[in-house]
Length: 459
Image: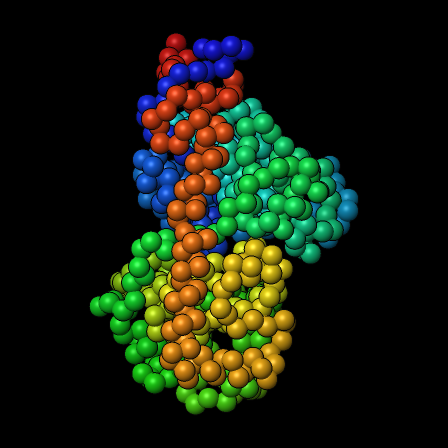
């Protein structure tokens, strides 16, 4: 032991890193980005474990707690009670704390079961989709001093539905918390400035990334029949909207584009499901497509986060199986935390139409990408630019090759590795376990790399 009771010494073994969120499953941005971080950290020989209310991870390295899922019925009912009003009853406060205590016990169980040395919270301390989970996690971190990275994709102040609420005290305490053992990470510089202004918390910007050093798989024996399986002809023009069906994705602009292009055999494909924000917008998009006679296909029932065969022999494709078959990507979002679909279009060397949402203007556009950009609506100039890209092979090739090289420079795994190295150094003085380090907290008894194991502590 060093001065003031802090542990010192060498960390010769890899760390056991626990990822915590409400969900690690499917095609949502948080799940996808967490998997990328896990890939990079595994490459540094650390061991990865998962805690969530919905999981598609190996049970041997994960802990499923259904009550931690943001769409658990009890949690949905609690959210209905605290949002849209400014006062909560004592009973609601008690309910939050009761559920918090249950989840807190589960988090401690997770720490003990897998001998967790570090936590990475994926949005659980950012946006109040699950209030008891955020409070439970905050208290565990405060009580243990466990090194934690808060990876924040969204904040409450970014979503209108959270602005009127009766939990301002809890939001200030846990979304996100101010604790000495937490390093805050945001995915864009706008969020960095807002976090500093609203909460006086410093943070590191780590953009979403893709492994640009690894060439994408285009056509293979599994995905070669995608068009045939969905009833598309070889010469059909496929426009892909690779997002969930929610209003801030601006999908109506993709419809307007398809209508005004007036090109034969055109189909609009939408990859993701309606998700958690209701069916009204989805139904309006369907009606609008029908009125404009735009063939539209919703693919989510045949997509999975990884490709697989169903019991009846039918295929479930991954989103990455779709990209090689499409001719244009539309990304007319009104707001995005960053933009996974933008990077995926660049990675698969597809031409891209993008709305100039605020984060795009600040963090992406200055990098010099060659895209068809709009300012909230489709113009005649937009139509002409799209037609040129679709019909001029040389123009298309020049565009996508330039974008790929820019993406590789600014949004690759190599960039993520450097950023994580800096954060880990702030905790340990190293990343891969080969250097001297002091973990900087006196209370957390991390058994895996501690000089004293849990079993020894109990003796």
